[in-house]
Image 1 (cartoon, rainbow, N blue to C red):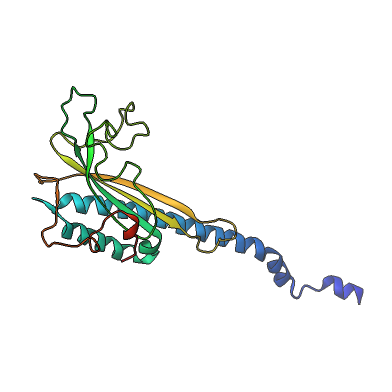
Image 2 (tube, one colour; image 1 turned 90 degrees about the horizontal axis):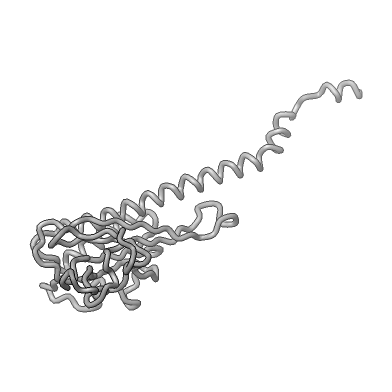
Amino acid sequence: MASRLLRERTGLAMIEFAYALPLLATVGLAGTEAANLALVTLRINQMAMLAADNAARVRISMDETDVNEVMVGLRFSGTGIKFGERGRVIISDIESNGIASGNSNAGYKITWQRCFGAKNAVSAYGTEGTGATNAALKFGIGTRTPATDTTGTIPITAGAMIVAEVRYTYSPLVAGMFMGNRELRAVQTFPVRDRAGQALTNSTGMNDTARRLCDAAHLGST
């Protein structure tokens, strides 16, 4: 009887699999989470590029209705990751502040700024009007110390550029117990094409409720 037990191999594979299952499951779930995070990060960068490019393409003049169309496009493109509920896009129009180059306040300004998304986030570069009368954006955007750092991104001479900042709260797909929510951020810039004036018009008379303003009252997912 003892010799038969020693030679018995029935169920051995199942026992080995049971021992290995926790490790295999952990590795599989970690791989799934890493792949999902990479895909969402790519999507966020693509959405920032889409926002900046579409806003920069509007010719002749920019209107509140044009802004609304850009935001609606972002809402649809971000449906799969619930961007409206978890994210925020901030679109800013940057141009020269018109102050003579010899003046210490010469630089760039945020002519207008519009937002979409329920996430409570603000631009890293300031609100609408920033830099209009001072050197807050002396060397453009992308600088931590605009007054001294000369490496910022700036518009072309006598032109403007659109800056799209996307902020998104990533919620883990399967590894919530191991990795908490994390914030993803993407910034893209595009030069404005064939638009003589940078003022944002409101030809249809949209009220403040319908406009995509950036204050706390306009946090929403639609």
